[in-house]
Amino acid sequence: MNQNELVQFLQKPSRDFTRDDIIRFIEAKGIAMLNFRYVSDDGKLKSLNFVPFSRDHLESILIRVPLGWNGATNMIKDANPADTSEFEDMPSKQTVELRSPDGSADIYKLFAGLVVATEHGLEMNSSLKKAEELYVDYNIFQNKNKAKRKNLESLPASCYESAECLLARRDYYEKDGVFPAGVIDNVVTKLKVFDDKGLSEKLYNRNEEISDLVRKFLHCG
Image (tube, rainbow, N blue to C red; front, side, top):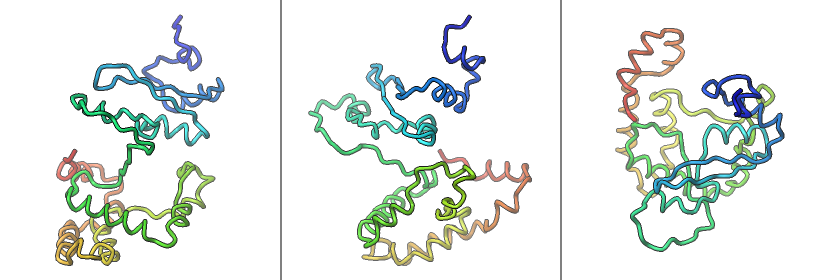
């Protein structure tokens, strides 16, 4: 008999475990803390401890573990093992994740845009209220949260829609001359050349055409 408690409980081999299986085990056993172990760049075994406060939080933990948000203050040394300088303790978190940018984005325009957006948010009179309105501490895909989900705007679904959004907000980016008007116009022109407005609906269930587009454009990584 397999001595692995998870295997015994789920009655399936570990290779077939799913996220829902693990969540079911955690809830059934009343587990209050999760411990993740990983091997860092220096070859040492290290661990991260999490105390899930809800099922949604538990699901997010099992999907992604951003190291810095657990107070792992030695991350700089892990990434730069040859650095011999003294480590300065920082009480704030070291990791910030922004997952919306396209992998093929122009890195200079991307970071300049992030700086502009950050400054705009910090200068807003209603920034705290806006942050509370948009804060997500629930699973947006559950039916019970449909009403809340309606308050969240979706990202553009195509290059054409991205261009339209940029035009609608160009004043933010052109403020203080960070983005010259010509740069905005050039980006908009390049995006609209793809002529992909409503492409998702047009290609629905047309797998061969979808594969052709993937092979042609989704090669950045």
